[in-house]
Amino acid sequence: MIKSPYEKYRQSAVQTSTPAQLVLMLYDGAIRFVRAGMDGLEKNDYEKANTNLGKAQTIISELMSTLNYSYDVSNNLFTMYEYTNFLLVEANIRKDKTKAEEALGYLTEIRETWLQASKIAAGQSPESTSMESTNG
Picture 1 (cartoon, helix red, strand yellow):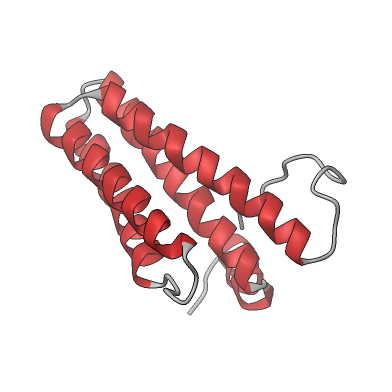
Picture 2 (picture 1 turned 30 degrees about the vertical axis):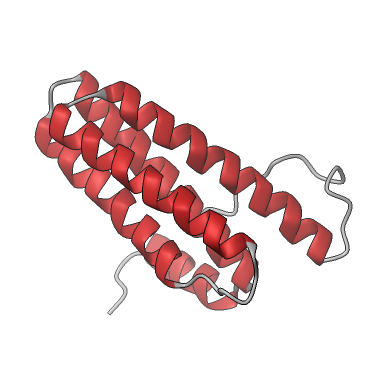
């Protein structure tokens, strides 16, 4: 049972989103969790860092498992996701914020590329709107 209006909104957002928007939501979540993990590392709150970096890894694993290999770019994306996941593991084990920052950079770049590609696929000009968040 959904208790809060926010949870109802989130569920509705997921249920009514296009596949491209759902992928953007995954990127937004991974980015948010990496940032929270970095905050934990900065504050020596290793439980917070571990929890949030782990959540980001889970999202990346989901992105990896849903790749469609009938497109050549999927192999490159898999490699990028695999490396990003490795960076998050290293950041978590070594308590190294720079590894998390590198992973965050890749996720942010891939998200922006996905946003632009989804606009092109939808027939919109990539420059027609500023980078908006579809985070639900």
